[in-house]
Image (tube, rainbow, N blue to C red; front, top):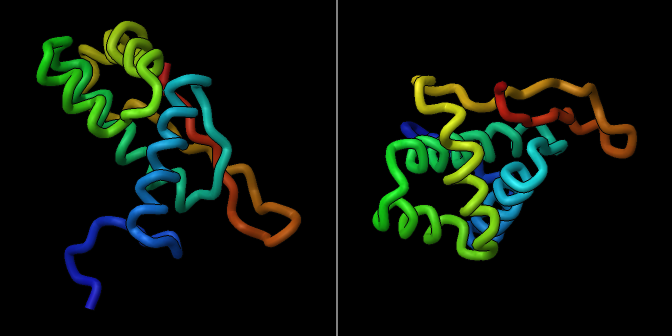
Length: 119
C-alpha cells in the first residue's frame, strides 16, 4: 500500500533522490527558473517552498542552520535565498513558484515543465 506517502520515488534510491532534488533547488534559487520533467518539478517545488517559508520567517541563526542542513553545498545560494528571494514573499501566504507545462521531450516523450518563481 502507498497510503499517506506524499513523495514520489522518481525511480531513484533515497540518497540519489535527495541529492538530485537538492541540486535542482540550488539551480532554481541561483538562476530563477528550472526546466525538468513534470514529476521532478513537483517534488522540487515542495522543497523550494518549504525553504522560502523558513527563510521569510526570519534571518536568525536557527533558520540559517536549518536551511544550510537542507542545502549544504553553496553558501552564496543561501545568501541569495535569505536576502533576495524570501523578502519578496513576506506578505504572500504560500505558492511562491509556478509550473509551466512545456510539452513532451522528443527523445523519450517525458512530460517537461518549467519551474519558476512567482513575481
